[in-house]
Image 1: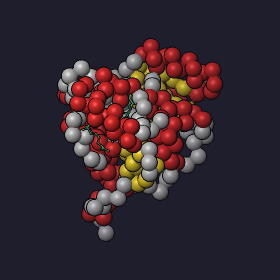
Image 2: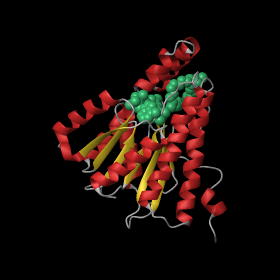
Image 3: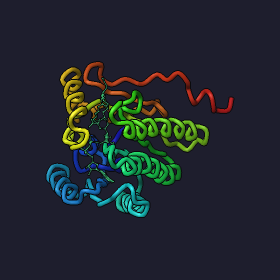
Image 4: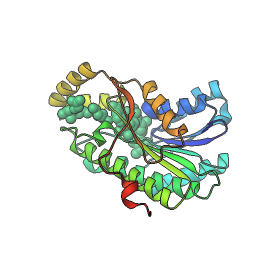
Length: 263
Ligand SMILES: NC(=O)C1=CN([C@@H]2O[C@H](COP(=O)(O)OP(=O)(O)OC[C@H]3O[C@@H](n4cnc5c(N)ncnc54)[C@H](O)[C@@H]3O)[C@@H](O)[C@H]2O)C=CC1
Ligand SMILES: CC/C=C\C[C@H](O)/C=C/C=C\C=C\C=C\C(=O)[C@@H](O)C/C=C\CCC(=O)O
């Protein structure tokens, strides 16, 4: 898929991975709608991108992905502004085991609602579209000290695979994938390490592990994201990316497509 002239929407895009995904899309000629709950950071970033790519290439929309009204409105504003929607990355996420209900609402409900909104718009377009949901290696293996975060990321992978199969069966023209990075040097990682109640154990274990495996930087993950967006042959594929070993597609024991697709 050639990204030149394509229209993308990225949630949680004011910093970290979301910011890197926006930048790689812009570099490849796409127009991008930036959504984030952090309004000063989002506006600041839009101003930075305006300098390099021009003000017409992006729009910043303040949006909390836990709000049905705000998310719906942001999708519709994006379509109105740019005329279509080709690429959606449901990326906003937090790692807060104390406020575990909020973690579920942001990480899982936000991704599910974003996927449904994207499908609704994309399936009406002749060219369809692609949805990339940000999961984590924690969606493939448990992070012992972060069970709720782990649950949300396993949920994202299951949901994405099921939707991808349904999309093939319904011939909607929409591809769905999930991206599973290991530790990435961002504020989310710092927030876990700085967490008052978990700090002791998590800090020691996480720092030990990061020393052993090394954290990824956001640009390495953005390259893997670009591969998922552009490769039209991989509907339903789940990509894992680690410092050692790089980016690879995950092999599952059960292939949902074979189990559920009509013969
Ligand atoms: N940093 C890491 O080690 C890894 C992160 N991930 C996932 O990558 C995604 C992005 O995380 P990072 O860039 O690391 O974190 P980050 O904390 O640097 O950035 C997250 C962004 O999401 C925004 N956000 C948070 N709650 C929101 C909400 N309710 N509505 C809209 N925006 C909201 C924040 O304001 C922030 O701009 C998350 O889904 C995270 O779980 C996955 C694997 C590893
Ligand atoms: C391998 C990392 C997977 C995902 C990163 C995730 O999205 C971000 C999480 C931020 C901090 C998590 C800290 C959690 C620590 C723990 O739960 C430890 O008990 C075990 C941590 C990792 C085990 C993986 C390994 O040993 O390679």
